[in-house]
Image 1: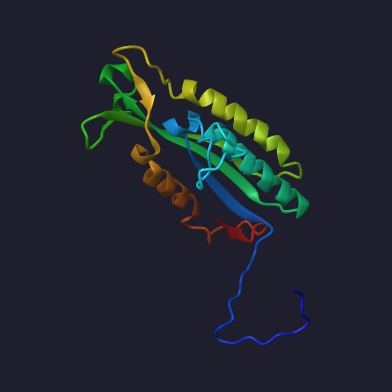
Image 2: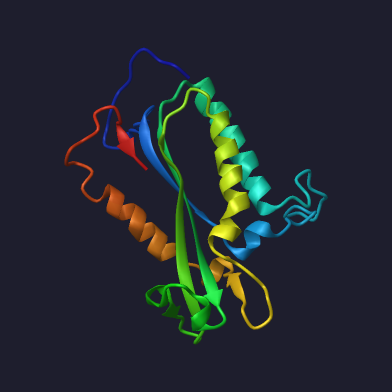
Length: 189
């Protein structure tokens, strides 16, 4: 509740909340994103979000978050990056042999990164959902995923993906955050 005064001690925990942070979302486009959620929740009861694609569940979360941001009149700078790992059946199937790597289990793979939104600040956050959905629909084609016999190019599962590489790329963006500051932003997440 709101108070007019208070006492600060060594046990006091301060929380600073920014109304204008730079935010980077890393969305792993793994095999599971095209899979359906269980029709049951963790307690075994039928769920209202049953049998939705995991991507649709993500969009539901985004919609609720954007409504909250709009209600609070926040001016965050949002970047959204899709990333994935593609397992390649044969090396000659790739156009760029330098991009092909060997996994610890002996399979060849390529890593893909796609910037969906970059530093977007909107009064109408809802318009960004359409951009995210369009990028989702076109992502398999941009990665050249195909299941033709002998020429498979398939997405990895989440556990086999390139999450550490994606985190490293986003950390490179924030590495020298104190140099040439954007004074419109008060935080980076």
